[in-house]
Image (cartoon, rainbow, N blue to C red):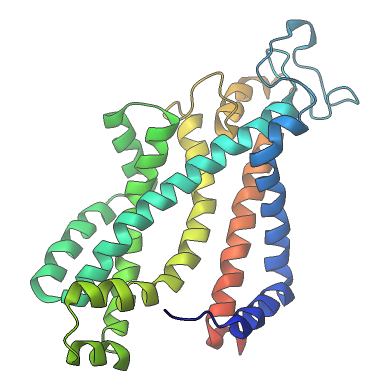
Length: 286
């Protein structure tokens, strides 16, 4: 069993903490994950209870972020909606990574015909912009938050596959892989124990960044009616509910959910950049 180098981990963690932008991203994500796990408990009102006598109230001491067109407290709905938006984004990345990474590693390790077949299939997916491809898939599967997450994950598969392939081509020529081949290790064992684990670092960085994109794309699909359905308090759906009230002055229904989407994207992007800098010595020398 390979032992974990705690000194190396401690050193990289210190480098990560010294990166001020990465630290800001970490604080943002801690806040968002707090909402995911304890959002309903932190809410002062029920996110689903209708109260027409208090509809469209501006931000005040009673309702810090105001109320929506059904009189529901906007802060409570945003807090409850964090788990729906973020979990859908995480599911999309897991789908893309779990399928794309093995395909890319197999393609890069075997090369030749296997590489050509897998990469040409990936090129077909890459011919479509990811969000457009996700929309087409949701049309086929049917509108729902889970289907939106799966569709975004499918659009991520070629992105992860190409990155994993590039890394696998480099790793398979390393001395320890060549030694394993010389000792008679099977191809499946080499892929699972040597090539795949040592190809994961850049994939983890991209997975972090793509989670931020996933928040935006999940919200986008919900906004156009292909994601979450009422009464789920998903952030993109909340913006869709409030867009018709912008012209009448009830700006808070769209601005505040949009700000939380922005925070999520920024947080994951900053974390991803921080991890990339820690794991790439060339970036630390700049």
